[in-house]
Image (cartoon, rainbow, N blue to C red):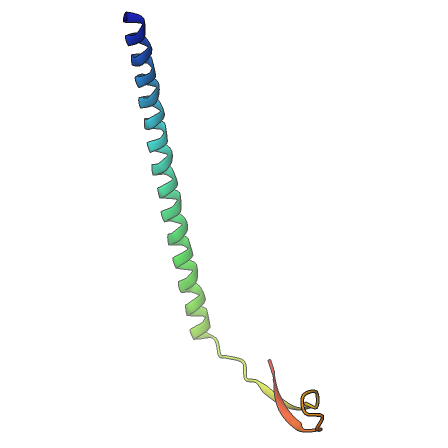
Amino acid sequence: MESTTLKQDDKISHLRTENTSLQEQLSSSKKAQEEAEERLFQMNQEISSSKSNSPRPTKRMTPSTNSSRTGNDRTRLRSIS
């Protein structure tokens, strides 16, 4: 019976050590995720700021023909960015 108790104590000790290690890994992962989310937020703010500060390119309109659907030759303006 003493042998069984020692085995159980050893297993409990091992599980506690593993639990502590997993909690530390989880904490580290959460911190890394929070840092990544913060960096992503900052990058998105920089992108938004850059978009609002730069003028948008104007689209030039050039004639093009579109006869594929109807068989008619119609001249239309299409957008070129």
